[in-house]
Picture (spheres, rainbow, N blue to C red):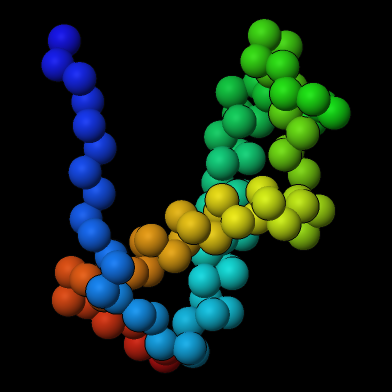
Length: 95
């Protein structure tokens, strides 16, 4: 099997409008909610420490209860998604 080498599109040249900061946080929270729902649907539960065999995870809490380091992961996903939208030539317009 050939070694997989990820090649994400470079987004270094994209700067998002300041107005999207609130949207970024809303997307980050939803990323966490989707991840949590998928885990729970797969039988995972909250646990103080991650245990894959018992399906326990300490991040199965509401977004606002996550520590900042965990929120950074969700924000990075949201930021990359928003930047990719702009990189591909789309705009976000609030109705």
